[in-house]
Each structure stands twice: as structure tokens, then as C-alpha cells.
Image (tube, rainbow, N blue to C red; front, top):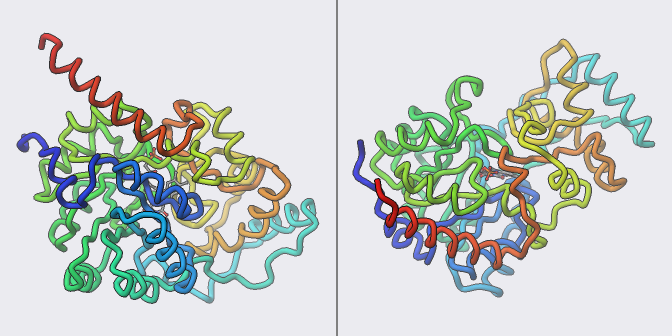
Length: 363
Ligand SMILES: Cc1cc2nc3c(=O)[nH]c(=O)nc-3n(C[C@H](O)[C@H](O)[C@H](O)COP(=O)(O)O)c2cc1C
């Protein structure tokens, strides 16, 4: 068993007050959320995967105008964005897309382009702007770890298995995010079949803690002080919460998504690749049910995302839950609608009280 975690390690590493990270969530973690969390003493995270370099630079400047605190910016690993431009949707998928498009008065997409920006150009912006913490999803490349460290900045990355965590440790990342299978959004899996990488937070975190030399940040299903304190007991130096922040007005998620989250139970979420081409956890809906039922290979990520893009966007505009990607973790029923500052204050206060209660309880 590894030594118990040093609660100071992430505070010192990131120069933050509370070792609570707001998960960077592409499309659901705007500047307002990042600043509110960092100002509350945690580490705000901008999910930048879809931001073109100029937009990204403008958002970084907006963050700096509002807050002098440290923050994290997240990119998707470049390897994940290399596209097979020859790929075409199968006839069954195309028939479904035509059917949905007709129902929504849309033209089916004629060409498919990645909805994500070039990660190499994005990374250059983060280096130029000296972003204090740079995080990656879907793995990280050795050259990028080196470039970030050469610039005197920090790099962290998600792992979904012990093997991935060890590989990241060997690459020299400053901390590993252990993403349990409860987590909302895309699985960070970058090595092997995602079905073998669906390991719950309770099992994943202590085994990662035992296997790596850097601080471990637990993610997946953590919604309140109980989850935070449990992860501390598992050996995590800190936690990363995504779904819990979707109830904050600063996240600015679409009304249809928020309404569905508020009505959801944990069994309403599923891990599916039919939205984007990569496995991700979200609320099951008609699109997922019908696309999963077809019997042909999906388009590779991120072209499958491009295929579903117009339908998803139009459904959001019309407030229809049938088609949008509504990412959510299994902790969804514990979601509260509250400001990010109030959520942070409650997480910190209740964690301290719970730790004290546990310390006072007989073993
Ligand atoms: C809406 C949503 C979007 C997400 N987008 C990203 C992302 O862009 N980059 C990333 O590293 N992780 C992303 N994640 C995953 C989070 O980093 C984290 O692993 C997850 O939220 C933790 O589980 P929880 O949602 O149960 O708190 C996303 C999660 C959600 C819920």
C-alpha cells in the first residue's frame, strides 16, 4: 500500500487553495465557470478541444482579465484528431441521418469535417500565453510533455487503466487523472479496448496510486463531500468533478440538457460511441438507441461527431431531447443547481466537516 496522500501536494503543485479541479468540458466549461472555480480556490478548467486558435487566445485573455488565479486548459491528443478522410458513413447510418434530417427540416451533411481544431496550433497558443496547467485527454505525446516542461508549465493527463497511468508517469506528466467508469463525457482511454478500461473509481484510484510516483487526481462519479473524502481515503491527492458543475449557471449548458439531467437517474446514462465515434458516457436518448441498433461499423472519431452535428445542434435549438449529446456521469441524480462559488464553498466546508467526523469516530 502506498503512503497516504499528501493533501498539500496538489495545493503546492498548482498553487491552489483546495485540491478540487473543475473538469475541463469541451462545450460546457466557458470562461465564466473557469474563473468562478479558480476564484473560489479550486482549479478551473477550460475545455478547449473545439476552440480554433484565435478564439482560444481570446478566451485565455478573458480569463486573465477576470482572474489572476491559476487555471487549466484541456486539449484532445493530436493522435486522436488524425482523420481518415476516405471514411464514409454506412448505408444504414445514412438512412437514419436522412430520416432525422427530414424530421428536423435539415439537409443531411454533404461533407464531413472534424469539429475540433488542430491541437498542435492550439498547444502553441497555450505555450505562448503561458497557461499554468495544460491537460490532455486521449493520451499525450512525449514531445508535448517536453515542450510544456521546457516552457516551465505543468502537464497532466487522464488515464482509465493502471497501465495507462504508468505510461503517463514514465512520460513525465506532473499528475495523473484516474478517470473511473462512472465519469461523464468521453472516456480518456488511449491504449486498448475501452470495454476493458471501464474500471470504477473505487477500484481504479488506489491501484493507480500504488503504481505511479506522481499525485493522482480522482475523477468519475464524485458529486459531493462524500465522494471527495472517499477519494482522499483511496489515496487521491485531489479530485476532478465534471457532472457536478453542469448544474451551475456558469456552465451555460442548453436548457434541454439541464432539464434531462435534473430528471435523470444513474441508470439513464450509458457509454456509447455512436455520438462521436469514441466511447463517452451520456444520457440515453432516441438517437443512441436507434444508432446502436444498426449493424454496420461506425465512422471513426471525430467524423461520426460531424455526421451527428447538424441534428444535435438543431435538436438543442428546438429543445428536443431525442438527438443531442447530453454527457453525464453516473452521479447525475445528486446534481444541484447552484452557483459555482456556492458549490465550491459547500464542497470544501462539508469535506472538512466529514473528515473531522471520521477522525473522531472509533475505528
Ligand atoms: C459534459 C462533459 C464534457 C467533458 N469534456 C471533457 C473534455 O473536453 N476534456 C476532458 O479531459 N474531459 C472531459 N470530460 C470528462 C471529465 O474530465 C471527467 O473525467 C468527468 O467529468 C469526471 O466524472 P463526473 O462527470 O462523474 O464528475 C467531460 C465530462 C463531461 C460531463
